[in-house]
Length: 486
Image (cartoon, rainbow, N blue to C red; front, side, top):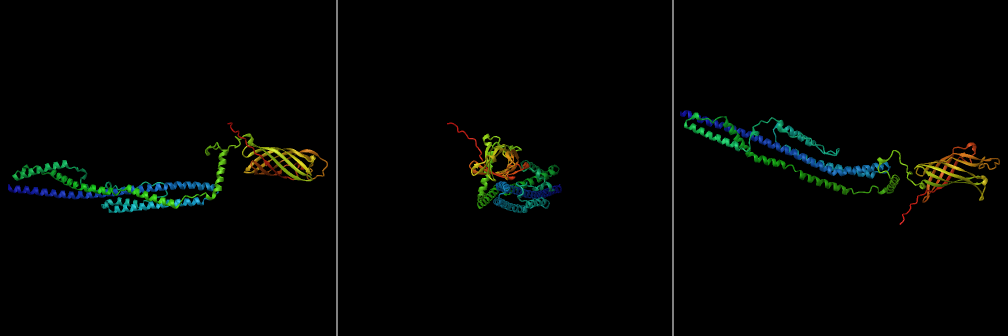
């Protein structure tokens, strides 16, 4: 009987020792899993810190370069306008180059800050110790960090395309059942206490020799002992885990990084602006600029009803449409001098009606006076109507076609004064030529004409040559504005 009792006691002792060894092995496995989890938490914190820091640096770069881009666009528009007017643009081009250089300096500074962040991130990732099967995602992340930079070819930062540290899901880590544990452990500890009390009763039964009454030594004792050991281990490491998480989170300092980057970029922009003070790029082109502004004012006054280029019709409007009639009528007086045996003076009063901005209708009367020592010879007079059209070619230069029919002595005695037999006839001529205008005094305009006679039937023309040179004056009129009665 005693021998049986000794065997049972020996069995119980061996049984408990074997369970203790299993609990120790479980503690080792649990500790390894906890360390791996902490390392993963630290790696994830480093990745988030890099993403946030890179975003902050890029946003600050965009804030500084946005005004530079806007100024560059304005300068480019001015350069295009000056090129269209064939004006020099070297000063604006130099300013544009300086802005581009300033933007390049900002880009270099931003990439310098990014390089420091990349170095810090890479160094932090190298300090993370993971099993070999977990190292591949970390290496991919470090490669992406080293290859990332802020590009000037785009206005915005490209999206962060990091290969995320999804290590847990892609690796076959032996599980110790940690996910099934209740960290509070109160309910499980109560059950284990009850089981231990049951085990004490079994020992007492064995001491009394009632070996058959032993009922609680089974597999449930092993499970409860393992749960108890795991719970104690995890509770011991809970504080350490929280401390490591806080340390990893403290590596992400977006506000401090943002403030530092903002102050440095603003300081550099201010220094660049002080080195390049604002200058007047039109200082040596004042007269040209004023002339262009004057032309623009005239165009605006001419087309007052047009508020936008999109409202412009396909054909330009007639600037004479709303003009008073008196302003469309221009009286003129033209003279032509010829010499023969007498001094011949052709006097041509007339009116010109402005049909449009370019076309005008001309009508008048020509009368020739023949002088000899202040005496007028009436038999040599030539008279008749003259009418035609005028086309404004460029400013101050017009083309004219003025057919006329003159009552003249035939054959003409301007080149052959000794002709005695003849008669007076109406003779057609078709002069065509060019007129140049110039200002004489206030509202009086002078002009000179050079005409060529296209038609001279049977040499009856009362002119001595086919080319006629004339001069005269024009008298534009303005409508008087009535002052309101007080």
